[in-house]
Length: 144
Ligand SMILES: O=C(CO)COP(=O)(O)O
Image 1 (cartoon, rainbow, N blue to C red):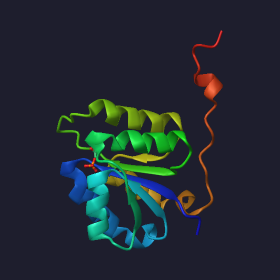
Image 2: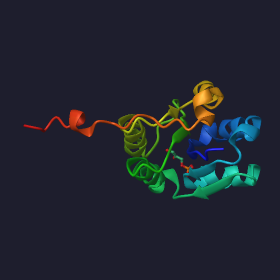
Image 3: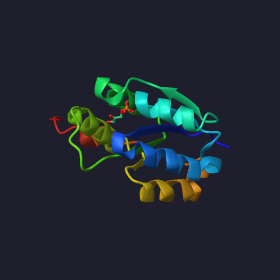
Image 4: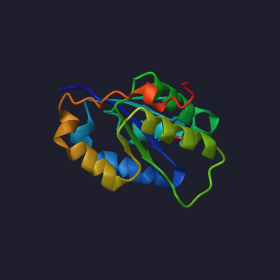
């Protein structure tokens, strides 16, 4: 199988949901390679030790930025980010930057279970599909 490089992030109230979603879909997901913000990664590793996961810094300490940098470098194929829409985050600007970069670089981004279910059940998920590269010139509004 084509190993997808998957970033996993969850806000605190959504971490149990992410653990549960991974468990419910473990057969579809194991064999891929995972990157995560710090606390999410630690909890995922405890719950699902069979997953190949590397934890970065905790989100409020720069982990969202690290995932964003990986996206900018073309090192992530899918972002699963279970967002808590009911709680203010001290690092909201980092969260916004991460979702912006995923949008800019045309990375599939699932912010809830329904979307994540649809992404991993798509035939594109198990194929060699790669999203179309972004035309950066078209995004550069400073061009004269
Ligand atoms: O805050 C987060 C995402 O914005 C997640 O960070 P942790 O996985 O370290 O809790």
